[in-house]
Image 1: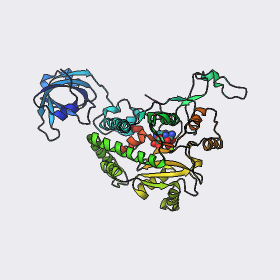
Image 2 (image 1 turned 180 degrees about the vertical axis):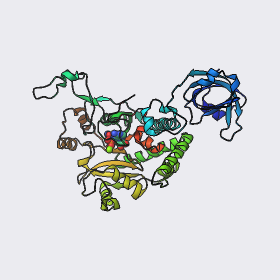
Image 3 (image 1 turned 90 degrees about the vertical axis):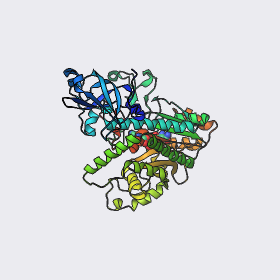
Image 4 (image 1 turned 180 degrees about the horizontal axis):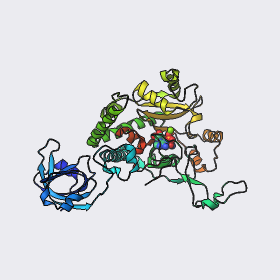
Amino acid sequence: MQRKTIKALLNSKPIDTTVCVKGWVRTKRNSKQVVFIMLNDGSTIHSLQVVMDANQLTEEVLFQITPGASLVITGTVATSPGGEQAIELHASQIEVLGTAPNYPLQPKRHSLEFLREIAHLRFRTNTFGAVFRIRHATSYAIHHFFHTAGFTYLHTPIITGIDAEGAGNMFGVSTLNPSQVPKYPDGSVDFTTDFFGQKTSLTVSGQLEAEAAALGLGAVYTFGPTFRAENSNTSRHLAEFWMVEPEVAFNDLSDNITLAETFLKYVIQFVLEHCPDDLAFLQKRAAEAQAKQANGLPAVPLLEKLHKVIADEFTCITYTEAIDILKHSKPNQKKKFAYPIQTWGCDLQSEHERYLVEEHFKKPVVITHYPSEIKAFYMRQEGGNTVAAMDVLFPGIGEIIGGSQREERLDKLTAVMQQKGMSTEALQWYLDTRRLGTIPHSGFGLGLERLVLFISGMDNIRDVIAFPRTPGHAEF
Ligand code: 4AD
Ligand code: MG
């Protein structure tokens, strides 16, 4: 008999029909007469209640049906007498595919830290089932948004010879024998005999390649793995994450901001529409976690938070205005910031971003026109030492998007590169795009995990990617 997913069954409720389901046992209770099994197959947050006459099962099979065991069950769909679920399955046959002795997931709430240690099994929990279905819906919505808007999906290289962000936090890629690295007399590594004949790394951004493509295709986006060897062990940073980078010919900074706001709202709306049960579950979960916390302050319920972000217009302020607000803010005056705001030109830390979003404006904030000193070389120079940059900040997250209008003027671009001590040699192809039919253009980068963190209401970025890579961690 053809297998039905639990999601399909719960949706269609085919009372009195005989069906076959397959999945993993969440819980089992039994008396001498009846056995009750909650079966989950990952298609939905809901488990299916299976009821069977215990006398129809051998002692051995009954013993093998424990949490984590995988089963094939055939039975008849019936209306469930209890108020908990609409339907249940009256099983006529149960086959155990795989037993699960010493299964580490018990029918109780495990800590997220513990579940990270068994990341290969956490997909079988309600929380991670919900998170990964939401991550899927988010990714799908991203593709759908850009496709509908006429963008071309561009796959940019993962191995690269360039440092697109000029931040130098890259993972090297080499086939040289680490114990016999060829060196020049001055001690520096000779990469000419390496696989690519040059020094290469894992990409920190596909932007520069996306720019080249946008200057031919008009509007493109990348969506791929991105690597940063920054040693920031925070709940917002991963060494390997997924970045979405649209790049649009003829867009200026204001078009770029509009695109970012429309895009974020579309994706959040899409997930609200397509994952109501998973979101409802996570909302309840977050509320329970919050209630346990010492301060006990009621948090805004997840769904309310998501609807509010869609309803509110994002506030746009300049970096200069942001510094002004922060300088005069209570936490700055009471010396509560770990990095006190003193002068124009300092970089904003996540504590500052979160103050602006969560305390001051209480909604998403776009900060524009940052000092060129603290931003990447490719951003368009303006008078007064600022660049046409934009960062989108979200409540509970801080920076979710970073972008800019690009410097399209060859002379200004090369001047900044020199000023920042960059070699123009390796980027001649990039400079060509400014020599040959240059145009104003803009783009931004969204960290997928930061968006999923926001939508799912989870607290730690390690819990919204299947197998997180962070300093000291590359298990699984
Ligand atoms: O602000 P970033 O560094 O910008 C760029 O890489 C540009 N090239 C983007 C562009 O204009 N095309 O990174 C963009 C976003 C951040 O706002 C953040 O959401 C995410 O990528 N991000 C990270 N997410 C998780 N872990 C990390 N270590 C991240 N670093 C950046
Ligand atoms: Mg940034």
